[in-house]
Image (cartoon, rainbow over all chains, first blue to last red; front, side, top):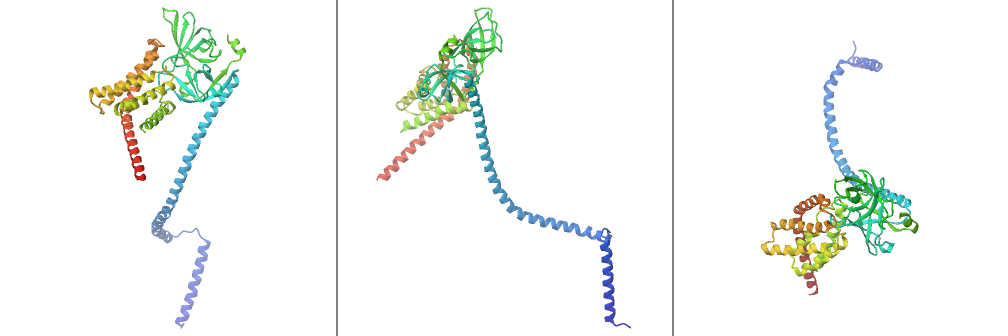
Length: 278
Length: 174
């Protein structure tokens, strides 16, 4: 009745119509899930995933190789920058500490009436048995033998030799050093001499004087070297024996002689101060 | 020319002893220049070493707060003691070296302690002595032989360098 050609055309039209209908229905109901669709997902997706990962891995190796080369270069550059920054940081920390020390010295300098000169410690005694330092100021700056050397914490020592540009300073912890001193609280007098192990001995303190551990010892000004009232240290040990007229007293200096870097040399005393200390 | 070597080495050791070591908290370590004195006593002729010892002692006496002449005395007598020991035992080897170092450190400390103790009574003084000397002895025994051998090696290299320099100059002039 119908030719093959006519049947084919009609079939095509119906197919197109069904197709359009299905598309339009599926377009309207997008969230509808189909079991066959899930099955395909179940089968294909793992393969897709594996292949995708493999490709990513290969791609990653390729791209990361070049990436790592760049990173390595960047790493080198960053390491160098870090080293420079660390070094700079160290320098700045040192400058900060130096600044702090100099500020302390300046404040101390303003608080004392003597004419003082700041000096840098450039060397220490080669022998552990003697305590002497070398400073970078000498006769050129007006330093002379016998000038007292101090820091904000207290007395450091006295100049024992002045060359044109440098001077030798005998510290108060040297066994050859002696400072006429008194206990601030009781006014007991004695002689501070260098001991062993960074401590001083407070000699010739009479037994009758009641002094205690922790008392502050200051210079008496009677030795003609150190002005009166400069801090020396604190009493760290008192032995009062039954016999004898003196007691054995140990003093721990306020100055940390291991960390001595900058000092102040007292250049001269005015006549008023000299008379005041007597 | 060998005096230039001695002068340079002395300068370096003095700087290390007075600036570098105290800066790093190693002020109590033994006298490095003593090792130089031992090196001179063990390996160098007396006519070459004695002027060096005298000048070195003089410089150190001036740099130290110790009474003048202590370093000179210590170095001079230690030098001759080392020479006498090496002649007496007829050896100059590594076995003898620690003995020389230990006795040298002790002798030097005896000289210095004697000088310090003149101004202090013994009860005041004895407390830190054993600790200080022991510390120095340990350091010296651990590092001294190596330092002396190093000085000897350095001197040999210096001599070789001078000879090579002289050869080259002779070759250039010919």
